[in-house]
Image: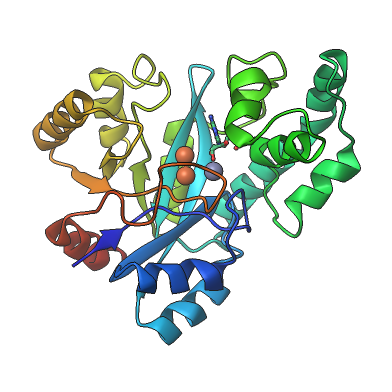
Length: 276
Ligand code: AMP
Ligand code: ZN
Ligand code: FE
Ligand code: FE
């Protein structure tokens, strides 16, 4: 069984449509794939239909933008009801924060000598309800300032980059509560990716478990072998689940091909049982 529990489409900042995503999953021999776009469930219906067609099991998910001590933390929510009022309001607020910071980022980019317009960025966003820095990156690529998204992040848009602007996000515990209220299973994505290890130390993770967290991603390309071993150990101590996933974004992110990391079939059975 090949199970991948984290992927993106052009409903947020990936580049495949939900149909293309599931066709690719079938070609690559996946049995189970979760679609977890940032802060939206809008791709689920198309994904479910495509999954049916190609014989891959579709898992409904959302990767929710949260924050802890001023740092960004991504919370995967499996099997949630996206219409649940508390969760729907939270997602609406997060998407508003995403759009609300665009003008400030564009002003910084203009000051840095690489001006792009809101119209250009919106064109990159297309119909995606979640506007993200990758769309700004795509506009910088189109304007010829950088070669690809990676260079745009490295030079301008990363969390420590000169064009970065913070946006509103709920706290992790509040998001865990909203996901539980909406009948979903909350799992922290790449907890120690991109320098997040200081904010999500062992005590903090244990605290989130007490607040209802069901587990965390271990096998993710942002984690090296030592981090994976340590995160697995912490999960075993806390009695929570560990997952593995690609975090596939289409051509938007290198070295994250579908199925490059997988979730253990026993863990998947447990997740399916709990969200069933
Ligand atoms: P945002 O959601 O607007 O805060 O943008 C963060 C998103 O940008 C992440 O979820 C990734 O998909 C993407 N991202 C972050 N860093 C990089 C990078 N160095 N290269 C490409 N994509 C990145
Ligand atoms: Zn993303
Ligand atoms: Fe993420
Ligand atoms: Fe992701």
